[in-house]
Length: 352
Image (cartoon, rainbow, N blue to C red; front, top):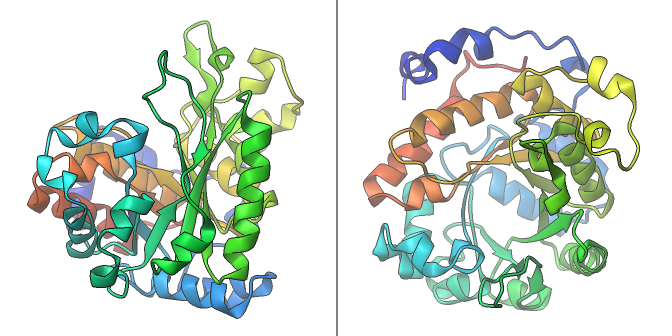
């Protein structure tokens, strides 16, 4: 996709996003993604050479190889949202092989999915594209529905099927979050011992996080703190929803915050809100990838480009987009993934 096409898709938001100068947290304070990120940032950590090698393999795969940015296809929605709801729009993805094919043909750095999906085709594909095994999931078969993350297998199982990374979700703010925090921290420690990269889905979840018509699940201050907890348990990459508001701690009147979080460290601009998420990833020492969100049809491409531009200019490391890609014909899914990648390849789009 050309830069002019990106401008066209951004429409009246193009100037707002592409000419924004972030004056809140200077880009000079950040550890930014790039070709030298592993050598200059990631290799300074306590991660062993096997973990560094796995991260290097992921960075060097797909259309973004060598750039330091990530484009990941995540397809765990068969459990998280039910297989019928996820794959009925495009039934070929009931077959796990097509999930992996989409990631490869779409030029992704890696494919993230369930134990079952990746194990079913591991001997054919684990050496062709890095596998990320999602260790835990919510499930919708309990009646009435509840929201919890349950371990579906072990880190050793993920390693045995050839995974280069493991992923897990913590619902910060939920009643079950303390147990999830312990489980995931222990799993990530073991994954590092076995040489695998760790990726945390850092989500907030509590019905009380909605107030007066505002949904603070995607507030920059709440999601930023979730990120900070994620890097505390040594997640190598944080997956987070794009922030849409701020002031959750103030308006919900819980936890602790500081006025400077809102006046000096962020603004209402989406790039500044997202930069606050990066700031909480130890100033970008560990990468932020934002999620692509649900498929909404014709507007998917424009929404994906918007998210990619915001993430890149904020100092993020990439995008992890699933439903927007697999809930359409494979050719169109490949084109959408490539379009996201083109944002990260565009030299005209730089850090704000």
